[in-house]
Length: 248
Image 1 (spheres, rainbow, N blue to C red):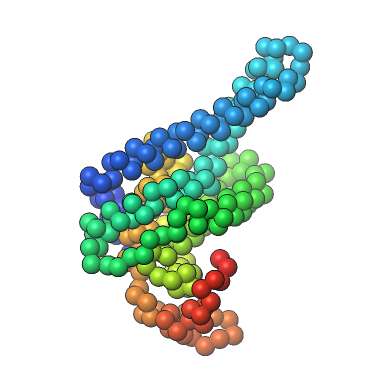
Image 2: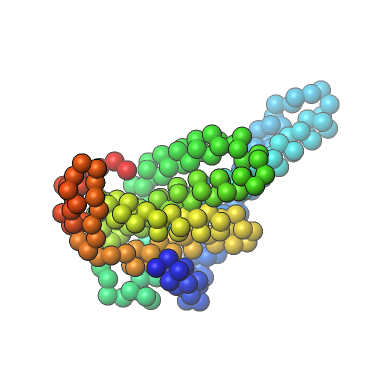
């Protein structure tokens, strides 16, 4: 159940292994946020838009502040990149406390996962920029923002952690078979990413939440799914299992 996974995620915070990872996550998050605004301000300041120096500086500063505000709401797109840096350590710590008897494979290294992560960032930026005009409509903006990023983050984090416990084809199959649960988890994550202070720990919490969610998932072969034009088959009999290199 998603509720159980969520409560276990909060409970994980009381364990000692979390503190060091939490500090590093918060520092990386703050650093990324400041770097974005600083670089933008410096770039704009190097191209004066008027002859009045004070006005150019004001415009550059205002633009930098605007980018930081925009970046605040686009941070969920970049947080999975931060998560890659400590994903295995956070997952191992959680598994050692709650699931000591499971066998898990290391998730892909930062270098191995980077190409897929960059594709995720590009896709997320495209969808959010496409929806930008709708984000200006009060009421609709937050709903649409959380729906879009909830879907994207539930999918990305689900697959990032799923490969610790299953092959990639099995991970994709299970995640799609339980898309509703992963979508709700993604909503929790996207909301957490926009709550001040909580968002400093959000990449870590998202990683831990997905560990609990996968351990609550049906065992391999215990679920079925109907594919269009195909017979219903067991997860362990999926035709995808012979294609380990399937694209996401």
